Amino acid sequence: MAQKLFIGGLAFSTPTERLRELFSQIEGVQSVTIVTDRDTGQSRGFGFVEVASTEAANDAIAKLNGVQLDGRTLRVEVSTPSAPRDGGFRSRSGGAGRGRW
Image (tube, rainbow, N blue to C red; front, side):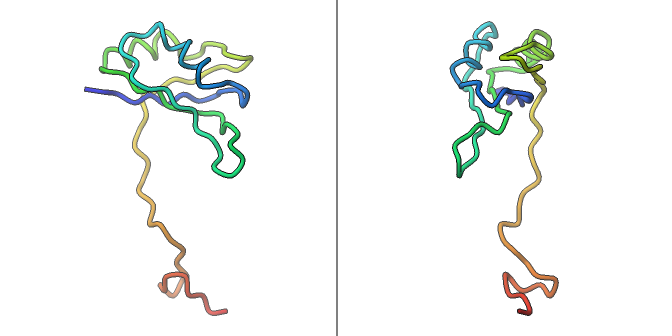
C-alpha cells in the first residue's frame, strides 16, 4: 500500500528535482512534490514524497531523517491526514459570511 511522507525543513531554494534526486536511493518512489505559495509560487519549506510501501517509507525515514540538504536539516516522517476544512467564513451568529456590519 502506498505511503505518503511529509518532508519538512526544506530550504526555500530547493527545487523538486533536487529532492527527487535525494530520494532516488529509496526503492519505489512514486511522486515528489514541494508545496508552494499559491500567490507567489515560492516554496513553503515543506513537501511530500509518496512511496510504494510501508517498508519503503520506513527505509526513507531511517536513511533521510536528519540529513542535510541545501544547508537545512530535513525532517522525514509519515504524513498524517489533516482535519477537513469547512470551506467558508462563518460569523458567530452562524450565517455563512453574513456579519452584522
